[in-house]
Length: 276
Length: 280
Image 1 (tube, chains in turn blue, red):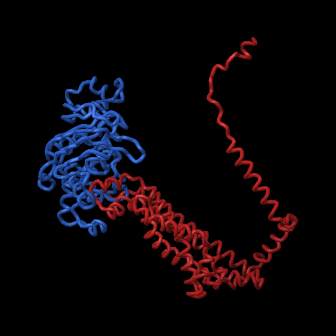
Image 2: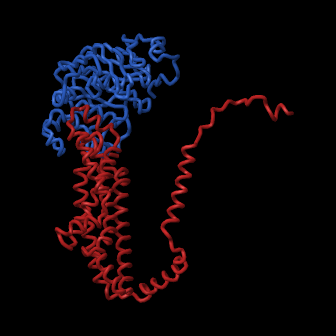
Image 3: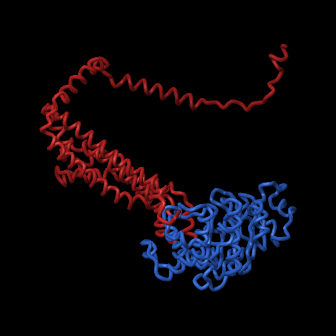
């Protein structure tokens, strides 16, 4: 697998009409079991920015990105995504917001026993009547969008295969295609490369950076490895124990900054290493 | 030397050993209950001495000279039993799936889950034979009564298996569908169903296997099938015919178990290894 897919993205089918800004204003999240995952986080991400959210596991990264699409509701404070005030949305309005926010996950979260095509079609759910999606039927436009999304990540030839038969890197590409087929304004990535080997991790990060550059999407990506954050993103948010401890350029964040974010001296496992 | 054998203080300060009083008490009480139970049922231990002789005697009656002329009729009635089992499984599984999925945590709301689970629990508490006796007042002594009893009786356990299977599906795929803006129905259809379907299909076949066995018992109350026949011949002490019936029931049940078991393995294990043309 080459680091950069040979097929460039078909802009026409996937172009969204403009990225959204993301604003968190004094946001806290307390889970029902009493765990406080976020403490008074204030943050503004401009449209089209590519931001890394860095921190150790348990620092609140996953919670932070999930407040953006309402998978985790903010206990207090305000989350604004484009024109939406996330905390005020319910039902159909909330699904509309989610339709505008693509998300990929550490464990890929594909339906392994369904085809690649059906998996990517999930990205069209917010834009399609429910009776159609329940039967697995796609209209002509949806079909075109799905195929274009798969093409843009170099996975078009696997379209009729089962998702479970793919390798980890291929699964994450299909998951990216699923998110892209939403024609999102914001892309969230929760530790997207933590389950991948280093070369594949680099190529998936390169895919995300390319999507950010070509389509101008706002990207928030959770990472725990410092070199990935420095190499692929322009801005870095540091979280420690649910508190925002760093917000600045990713390139100039030196080891001292990372030691501050991690709250301990650097270790070998904090770096992924370069692509083989 | 004495300093080595008896150090003034233990060198390793181990945490105090936990008191296991509760465990010990439970063990003693359980033991006492078992002994009391043995004492109170008044087992006739002397009967045990004659058991081997009796077993040999009846085995000889049944299998020394089986009445093979009864074979066609036995096969025909066994087929009725299998039909009863199949129809009962089909009806029961369909109803269980429809009622079981909303009863899963994370799918249906609490006000729906609790009553559904209560209904399943009540059905589980009632044996199929009792259900058959109740509904035969409406449908009469027919194989259809047997099938209905199997269907209703099956809902208790099968719906429980269904919601437990759904709950055991890892939540990631469902989360992805929700994150993409899917409704509750869409999340169930594309986040849960693809992962749970092979398990559910396998359980449906297992339900059929169980029903084949249970249908023979249901015959005892007269709803037809091989159980009916077995009761009749036993009551008239036609042991040579009973022998044929037992052979037929055992062979047919084992054959169905083998075929159904192979199918279930294929569904749950084989599908995972399957490669669709073009994926590799």
